[in-house]
Length: 305
Image (cartoon, rainbow, N blue to C red):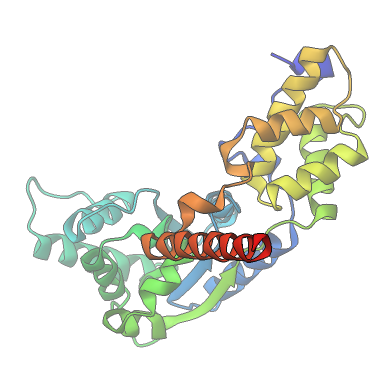
């Protein structure tokens, strides 16, 4: 829609993960390096945690892209799986031919045989699970049991969990203490600071074909403040701001365009405090207002007397 107007070859702020648009932000780079080193050392369980929109899925895709032979990867983007379905999905991702209507015991046995053969041949099987905070309790326990498979020297399967902060809270529960103790490396993704937001926007515009800077400095500062440094929100706002500038017939994005984008985006609008209060807090607020009104009326009456 606006690409030709700004001299772009494609939209720079699409929400779908695109490796060509992966920005080398510090916490992302540190996490990727840590994961690769830990996997090379043969660690069994690794974890990456980050708030919604910080790029966990893109990091997962980047790791998949960079894990060349001898690594063999299985990727589970959908965590809403039963324990049996998870075993079957991992088996099929690793190329195991399953019989029709196999029992879970058969699947487990075939998995163990396959993983043992792969490790004996010098291969490094790795399972990556996205949105791991949504794994059912039984499935999370099945993941732990899969990492019990090992030789005298190493684990047969390494696992990387990608999840929101809720994952940490779940793993802190007593029922998951064995799994939590096995996580040897944990990475936390951070939001972008204002300078990083500016670099992020400029980078994605260049990747899309921009030959000049389109966003003004003031617009980038407003964008950074409204997005709170969350890349997904930066993408949403920047895309809408470009559309606003295009609609005005302008070849640059200013703060007015960013303000319009903010007004059109629920996640960046100021939220009223009243709906967020719990019922008890609302009642307390009503009580305080009523008490204030009562005291004010008494004061007025006293003054009138």
